[in-house]
Length: 107
Length: 120
Image (tube, rainbow over all chains, first blue to last red; front, side):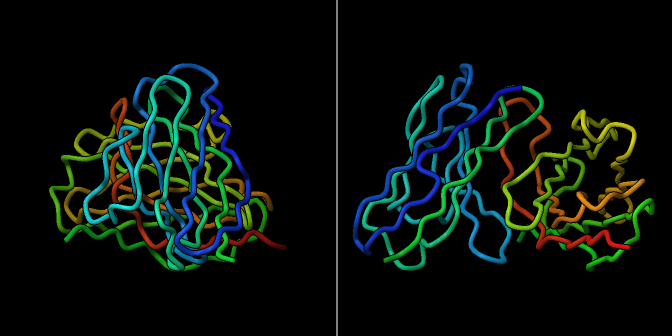
């Protein structure tokens, strides 16, 4: 099973600040890495597919990068509505797995 | 627009079964798989498995093998997830999501979630 480890687990950030979340895979997964945003009491929403491709309708301040084992989700100029937990997910092999999540709080 | 609408909350006793439905619309049902993901209270996301809508092929998480069955009804564009022999640690919100059945694929649309509570 591929283990995805996100860091940090929690981040408290002021609006307009830049946020960087990393996701490290226990073995190479190419670009089969996707990012989701989950706000409290809501379903997860797809932000980034295949490591760096923005999903339709996602604000341009969200971007992704990386390949192999190391990936990054960046939120440029954080807005209050970005308070959420962010998860990475790999679809390179079975079983599909998720990172443990990174909670982003607005100061 | 693509929509996945799930059935309502359930309360079950230990040992019972639950069947959650996921009615889809806005796309060709048989062109995508449906993945099921659950989230225990205050916890992260756990992949349960998928079903390929056009032929019913399934792939389940090993820890759920023997207790879970995923099915589809192509006449109503609805997917179902049945979990048997419920335990307290099955208490979770259960989500259906479109996609995930192909290597490399992602989940682009999600249902609203169904809370299943297992309690005596």
